[in-house]
Structure formats: structure tokens, C-alpha cells
Length: 237
Length: 194
Image 1 (spheres, rainbow over the protein chains, first blue to last red):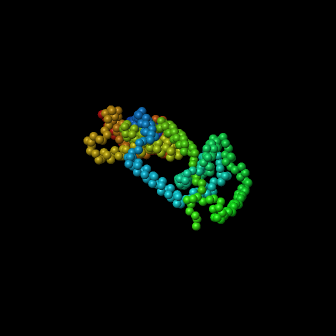
Image 2 (image 1 turned 60 degrees about the horizontal axis):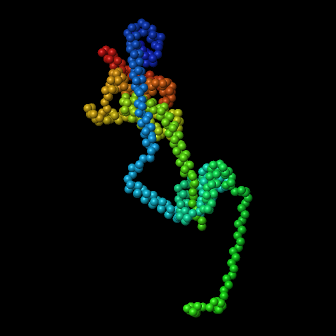
Image 3 (image 1 turned 30 degrees about the vertical axis):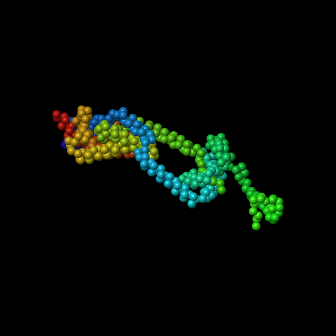
């Protein structure tokens, strides 16, 4: 068989870096020029591999990782705002305007009683769990608190849906805080938050009838006789 | 009528603390990956760009990009493969933009990066031809060759990194080496004749 027929097989064997097939080996034994060509091909592939290793295994500069770390650290440091002072002022004014608008909206559309009633409907005693997030409390405050309540309800719908709210008089807030802290830390069982006799039906509220005593009307003459009028006082007609 | 306010004692502080702890854990995990895979990103970029400074820039960009998207990576075990792709893609983009710039600028322009004397001294003539021949290969072949030539990478690891069957990696490597040989055969003979 002529040498050119072995050309492709010779290159493939060199490229695969494997031993030549039996047929090719027999030809190489007999043909000096193909043996030389095969040697050159193997040299060529060895040179390619060596060159590739040089390219692929370049020494990594020591500065690389420190540069990346420095960049990461820089991103964590809060940077000074690029906004000019005027823009900050405008943003603050806009924020105040939005707050005023929302408060006005809340006053018109969501009465406080509606909010409290909806809160009461969403939370039943059976839902109370010893969750660390339990801690929302409601306390009596100044008249402006009404709007704040509406604001909180609008801005935190998740809290309204999932958290237990507690109504406490202003004077008992500290005690309630201490109780909730105890529940959170596991020192107090959350069972105490449940009514002791939750199965027992609430009794009707007994309201005693309002007693109004009759007003005694006395004639003016009798009043005049009882208390003498002062000399400057004009007589009544 | 009694008026009420809704308060959530201690909740903001707890949330803040949890966020900080999560962020610190996230950063620690990324730091580990950075030390392990940073060199890989550089070498991939260097293999494409053949310039140390450009490769360092690209590797840094790839690592920062990986950090920004690290939280979105579902399988953290795929980080190496993911980083290799980011670095390779960024390096290819940089080569392309350099080529566009080359077309715009005149050949004698000072802004076009030329190989330094150090580079010229280090690189043999064959290496220069090889690098040029590599550039002409298809991207998929070039990446397989680069990763396969890196120390400590077996065919199986390259296959895993590229999410390819081992057989595909083998055939791509074979094809790529043959193409390189075809391009370089004449140069080897010229160099040997001198």
C-alpha cells in the first residue's frame, strides 16, 4: 500500500498519543520516511501540549485575591451619598408630603374601630404560639396615635396578618413587655397568654339600671325667703 | 373612645442581628471559594487574553460578578464550572472589543497594547504561533483545550466542569489538537529548517 494511505492513520495515532495500529506499525517498520513523518508528528503534538501547558498554567499574581477582597470590603462600607444637599432636602420634603397624604387618607377611609375589629377577627386565642416574634402590643396613647396605628397597619400587612397583638393599658405596658420577654426566652410558657377557662362561655355582662332621682323644683318665693337678696341686686320680674 | 398604637418591641434589633449573621456566613463561604477558584479564573482569562494585566482585570471582574450572583447559585458545588464560564465569556468579550478597537485605530497608534519586551523574550516563536492558532479555534474547542492543559485537571473533571459527557470532551480535544497541528505544521518545518 502506498505511503499516502497511511498519512491520516499516522496523524491520528500521534494526535491520540496512542500506540499505532498493527497495520500501521508493520508499515512503519518497513518505511523509513513514514517513520520519520510519524516522529515529526509526535514531536509536533508534544510541542503543542507543552505550549498549551505554558499558556494554561500561567503564574497567578499575588495581587489578584487581595484586589478582589479589597473591592468586596469597599462595597460593604457605606459610601457617602452622591446626592447633593438640595436633592436630599427635596427628598425629605417629598417624604413628609407622602406621610401627610397617607395620614389624611387613613383618617377618611379607615376608622380606628374598623381596624381594631379586623385585628380581633384575625387573631383567635387558639392561634397564639410561643413564637419569638410574638411581641406586638397595643397601648393607649395620645390622639395622634390613631393615625399612627393606621399607618402601621398599611405599611406592615404581614405583621397584621401573622402577629398577635395585645391590648394593654398604658400603665401595664412594662409588665407586658417583661412577660413577652420571658416567653421569648423560654422562661415563661406561652400557655399563660391563653385564657384559663377558654372553654367556658362568657357570661352576659350585667348592667344595673341607671337610677335618676327626681329633681325637686321649689317656688321662687320660697328661695327668696330662705336667702335674703343683697342690697345691689335688682328684683326679679 | 380609647385610641391605640401598634408596637413591635425588639423585633427590628433581632432582624438586624440575623441579617448581619447571615451576611457574615455568606461572605465566609465566598472567601473559601475565592481562595480555591481564584487562580482558575485567572488562568482561563490568561489563556484567552495572553496578557497578564488584562487577565488579572478580567479575573477580578469575574470573581466580583460571581460574588454578586453567588446567592442565586442553587448548587454551590457547581461554583467552579460557573466561574470558569463567567471568566471565559468575559475574556472573549474583551478580546472582541480589543479587535473592534484595533479596526478603529491605526496600526501605529500608541493606545493599542503591544507585547512588552518581557513577553517577547519569554515567548518562543512557536508559542506565538500556537497562541495565534488557538485564537482561530472555536470557543468550545479552546475552552476544552485550556482546561485540559491546566495542572490537575483530568478529562472527567473537565467534563464535569463543562457539564458535558466525557466522550464529548475527548472528541473536542482530539479535534482541537488536530486543527492546531494543521495550522502549526508548516511553522515547525520552517523553524527547523533555519
